[in-house]
Length: 112
Image (cartoon, rainbow, N blue to C red; front, side, top):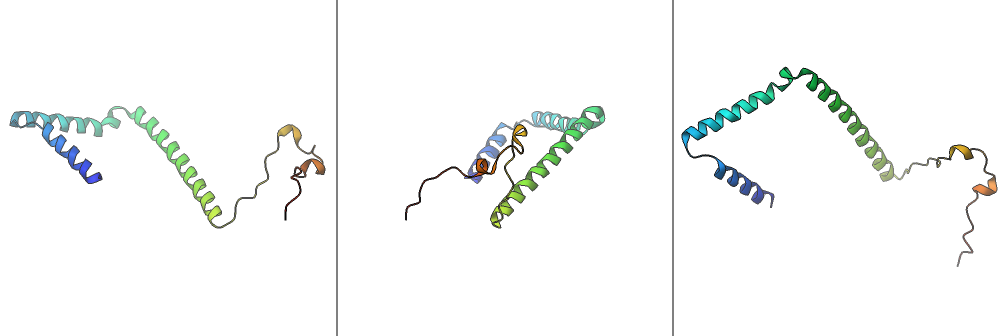
């Protein structure tokens, strides 16, 4: 299915190309100028490129952290070592619960 779509869009793009040689030359010159402007963007806008590079570095750092965290979580579950972390307690209730408060709620008699 992907190849059919690819062939369709490539054929559509070819149909949109001009047949006249002067129009082809003008299209080529326009495309070359656009590529040249894109490749020299950082030369003309150094501060914008520096800001973009900083944002990209922060994004990559966050993405690496997320990927590492997801990998660690998946590998710990696959190994059967589910993380046994205590549930966080609210700030005001630390150390105020009695052992009877911490006991599980009554669940009724088990059937045999």
